[in-house]
Image 1 (cartoon, helix red, strand yellow):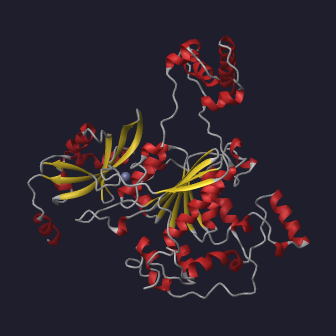
Image 2 (cartoon, helix red, strand yellow; image 1 turned 30 degrees about the vertical axis):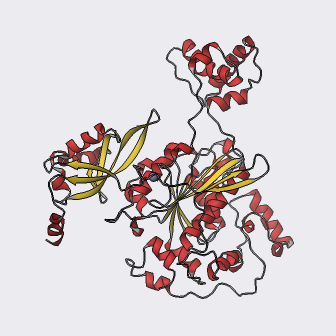
Image 3 (spheres, helix red, strand yellow; image 1 turned 90 degrees about the horizontal axis):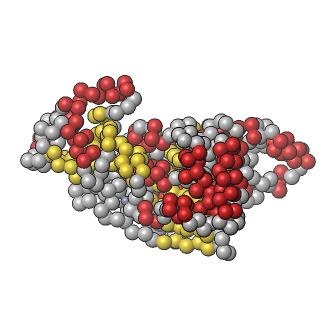
Length: 516
Ligand SMILES: [Zn+2]
């Protein structure tokens, strides 16, 4: 069979009757009259062959109005470099890589990619992935476009302010890269059911929040199953590529659940957010940031008893700024400015467009390599630092064997008489889990859902049914629980994979149940 690597990761050929047809050799797209190299820059920079006066005018018009029609790029030229990578053998390819001129078509027709985040990194990722031959993309982002995004989130225009980032980003990339289909999802990542995430072969993250990364990580790791020897089952592995940037620094990491460390295995890599002790703010401020936080955390409440502070209200921000300035003068501290006030209060991390571009390129390349096997993946954490010269380093982190998220799952032992309601209570009291208000699913079926109301009503009768019955009398089963759990002192959405085993039920019972 061709393309074992691709098939291994996407597990399509066994189930999809059309796969054989899709796997049939396609005519080569190379070898036309186009000998011009078409690097990814083609997307942004006019190619020399197009420098006629007519196309220049067309491009000028296109730049003035982003919706204007683009001159159609010559397809084989655009994909020439990708086809080079996919159709030639090499010393650095994965063992299962089988070069073929049809690989790019397969990549486009079979592989479903989810991009999480349509901000600074997300815009770059969508463009890079679309130009790397991926044609079935989804993007999810709950944010709308703000005018301050426009300097780097290059898919957005002034007239897009207020619209959904995911929707506009999807539309813009589809306009520019023919044949690519991007489905936008304008919602929170927690609003999607697990089933939604299961359709993707790879998930690429362009996020700026630890909580969101942690959630997606637990979703992807939640699909992971182990065999009886605790080896991950290949068809349940959902790889992720995680990008992140902060000013001139960034990282791109490859997460293969069960093989490389997951996000949770080394969450200690992310330092806790800088918080100042209140006593320092109140009594011994030493920096401009201390003065700003004093005005923000202490003075505001003193003066505006009960009125909530709104960081997006310019008047509120101006008030904090002038109070911080007074405080700074009192203690002889310099450096309080309006923009620093905004930065400290909103915890703004400076965003640099070129860092996003570099990290996104690294992530898209890793996704491409993971799916095609045309080269070895980064193992497993790449860091980029553009602050002092340019420095790229790859660190091989190791898995935490006791990880709650990517391990085989926390074992919960139940009596055969324990009901679903009792099980949910156990999750709340479990010292490692502490999931409150849990919703419980088993193999995609909702056993109990806290919301929406209609699902809650439908699943409520299950609460009094023994789990043993709900899980159809198997001695052990994997279930998923979502709910709120405390993480670093904050309540966050949490998803946990649990192995439920019933006391006194022998494994041999399973054979009877399954064969009956
Ligand atoms: Zn882990």
